[in-house]
Length: 267
Image (tube, rainbow, N blue to C red):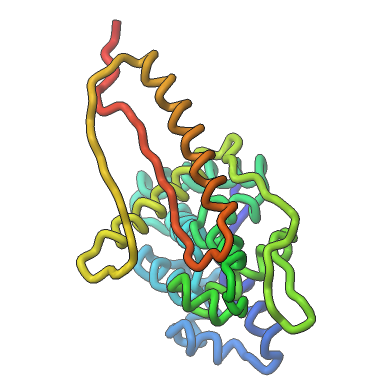
């Protein structure tokens, strides 16, 4: 399969975004902000030099890519420039899987259901007495201003948020599907990120409320299917109860996990 994306597209797209905000923003200023010599950045954009894995990781960070975009950016670079043929092939397989997902659900939709903060932004806008500016969104969710701005731009393009005449944001009446369709890649990205957020919530210096538990129990697989359905129903009921509360003042995450610990034995 021929790749439809290139890591250079991410660099050019970010340059164009910054130039829209500031028409006098130059390639030299961009290279300064990326901490890459201007001549080297020009060579990268013109395809005269490639990217090592470490350089790709560093650039992805400087570009303020979302977690899922960062993985894709690095894989695109590795699929072309990794020194090992095996590493190039493995990266290409991941790139192809990602592009197949894009074809099925759309690139913007993939991002929104892959990265945790898109959903968080649409929900935090519903808090009572919250001043819905990009600066406040970034501060309350622990995002950089640049990341928050790009997320808002994408959500606005998908008509999931809208801005009023005073420049304040709100969640629109439009709904997006939080199902993952055929994209296990998007689902895996999202749940891995939420596991990281849960780990952060348990840190010793965290002052936010959290309640977590885990237990293991022997059962049979047919009964496990029934329990999984009950857990899904319970989750929906709890979320509905929380959503109907007035005077919302904080954003919480409800995460459930129920999975088999034993290897499946062949018959």
